[in-house]
Image (cartoon, rainbow, N blue to C red; front, side, top):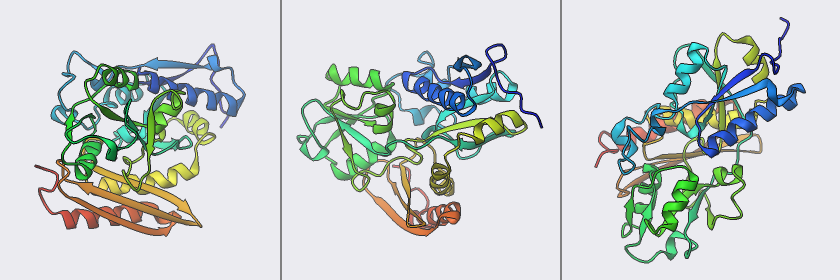
Length: 318
């Protein structure tokens, strides 16, 4: 098959959310594709799509995401545009992605993974342990909330939604004493040096499944998109995410379930750590396994099923 490359006259459309971080990820995707095929960046159009999760008219800023239906909250409208042909590729933060794609869509391209760690952000404190008793911490992540309360049940946790800039503004306004951001987002926005954020090692706070990873989704029957994406796919990231997302799928989890996991490659083996928590942080179950890199998805599934059996029914409800 002769590959017809996109051009300024006939650009390829890349769909994304409209936040500064989402746009940075879409431009990174565009630039990698342009370099791989020696194309003018104008051969790609960035198409901003507002998702349910972005629609402030539908969602109260103080209402937890889990109360409004979390699966596909930041992806549904983008995937609908991809299915209908309104866009040719969709760029996603992988920690937002459900483990099952709609019929006809395929997610098999990942960019090199960024820093997986969370950052503790507070103007006057350097670590969770430094916070005074009863301090207010803002986060919209059920995982971070549960992990924080597991360590410090004395703290008060308030809903803290919005993009990076919005959350920093809320912190500056005194809505909370501290919050958390992803190191990957700070780095992609070139803000890691200016934000008073201290990285939290995974041993203290295990990150969300697929945190720091960008995925590019395409139509299954689009050979041009398949060829383009194959050139920029980062195989190591794909292997790590296969294990983490299989772990998540076995637990029937989503981005609003208190589940954490991290897969790492070393010495020809894949090492996977995972944990599940009660939403109030009162209990945590952890597991770790290692195996051949090529068996990562099976390892993740097996570990997730094991933790699910240990937890029993009702573990994720208060």
